[in-house]
Structure formats: structure tokens, C-alpha cells
Amino acid sequence: MMTIDKAISLLTSLKNESTKESEIRVYKEFIHILKRLDERGLSKEEIESVEEKLQDLNLESEPKNRKRYFKKQLHSFKEFLNESFSLTTKNHYQNLYLIVGMVFGVTFGILIGEASDKSMGISLGICMGMLIGILIGRSKDAEAEKEGKVI
Image (cartoon, rainbow, N blue to C red; front, side, top):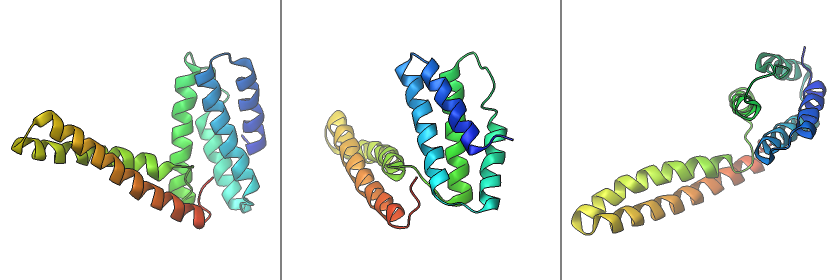
């Protein structure tokens, strides 16, 4: 069984072996999340659930592209934490709503652009969408932080 401590130790050794900064960042983020989970004082059942997920992630494998593999596993682990415990990482909602705002901004910009210059309308729409998305995301992140759901 892959315990939280064993996963931290494995990821730390992989981080120390690596020379690629982008790969090291993935390991650091994974380690940070695991340490925060360890500090949360989870119940025995919750810890077992986390350790089962860590076992399923197969962190001890030797993939050809380690960065891509561990980034995918990190994403899967974050989704698991969100679904199982309603936990998010810092700026989770800000990043999510930024993207949603941009999508709606492009659509809005195209509609505005029909009446005037298309490129100006799209640019304005993207900017407004990003701004609104960031504002909504920050308020959701602050709410999650207040509820103690950020790791």
C-alpha cells in the first residue's frame, strides 16, 4: 500500500534526481498537496481512501515521459480530492473562471464586433470576460479558504 509518507519520499527522491525545472515543479506541487493533507488530521477512513488513490496512481512506475505522466497523475489526484473531500488548491476557482470568462468573452466580443470592428469587439470581449472571470474566481477562492477547503 502506498502511504502518504511513502509517496512524499518517492516524489522527493524523483525531484532530487531531476534536472528539468518543469518536472521539478510538478513534484513540488504533488509533495505540497500531500504534506498539507497529512497536516489536516484526516480520519482513518479518509486516510485509507487517499492511500488507495495513491496506490491506483501507480507512482512507482517508470514511464518514458515522467513529467507528462506525473502531471496527469497530479491532475487525477486533485480531481479525486475535489470530488471526495471538496478540497481545492490555491487559485483553483480563479483559474477555472478565467477560462470560462474568456470563452464567454469571445462569444460576447463576436456579437459586439458585428456592430463595429470585429477584432476590437473580440479583444474587448476577451478582456471583459477575463476580468469578470477573475473577480468571480477570487471570490469563490476566498469562500473556499474561509471554509478551510484549500490545501
